[in-house]
Structure formats: C-alpha cells, structure tokens
Length: 139
Ligand code: DGP
Image (cartoon, rainbow, N blue to C red):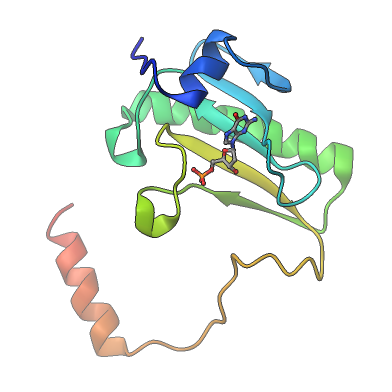
C-alpha cells in the first residue's frame, strides 16, 4: 500500500496520530474532521496514499464511494440535517489543504451560510457547448 511518511492522513491510517474513527475497511477510513464546518463534518479517505482524484485507481474510488454512502446515511440518520454536501477538492485552486484523496461528508443546516454554494445564473449556450467539446475530446 502506498504510504507517504510526511502525510498527516497516512499517519492517521497508521494510527500514529489520534483521530475519532467512525468506520474502516481494507480500502477506506472514515473519521471526524478536526476543523468541522458544521456538527458532524467527517472525512472518508482512501487508505493508500494518492494525492488527488486524478491519481485514484477506479476500483479504489469505487470502494471509497461505498464508504461515503454508508457514512452519509449514518450522518443523516444520527443528526437529521436539513441537507448534506459531499465535497472533494483537488489542487490549490480548489483549496485542497491535505494532498491525500478524501471526501468531506458535510451535514448542512438551513441558514448555516457556509460559503460553498454559488448563485446559479444562466450561462452562455455557445460557451457551454464549446467547452463541452474540449472536454469530450479528452474522454
Ligand atoms: P481539504 O482542505 O479539502 O484538503 O480538507 C482537509 C481537511 O482535513 C480539513 O477540513 C481539516 C482536516 N484535517 C487536517 N488535519 C487533520 C488532522 O490531523 N486530523 C483530522 N481529523 N482532520 C484533519
């Protein structure tokens, strides 16, 4: 299993630093976020070290996703939030602070004013179509 000895999440996986563990299996680990944006904010990480989504083997991503679903349902049942966001950040521009693949399971409350929502406004159709072509060319 890939390990980065300088990675804080690899140290959590190894039990070298403490965390409030929720669940683990061979591929994934869920634990509470140390800086919760809301009550119940937790993280699901891949156990092997992969810095971003782009580095993730698809089968590992699937296994982590299964744990995300399990934990999200438990958060929903335990806390009855008004909603729940999954947040997964890659790179500095996305404000990723720990370069080890993880998914935030973030319960939401009406009026919590967390700054992850954007105001929906109609896009330019031609610009949307043009960028769709650029992405499709790489699929
Ligand atoms: P991101 O910015 O998307 O890379 O999220 C990283 C999250 O990891 C951030 O919400 C805080 C959390 N975090 C950072 N260090 C630790 C730690 O040592 N323990 C725990 N439980 N969470 C941590």
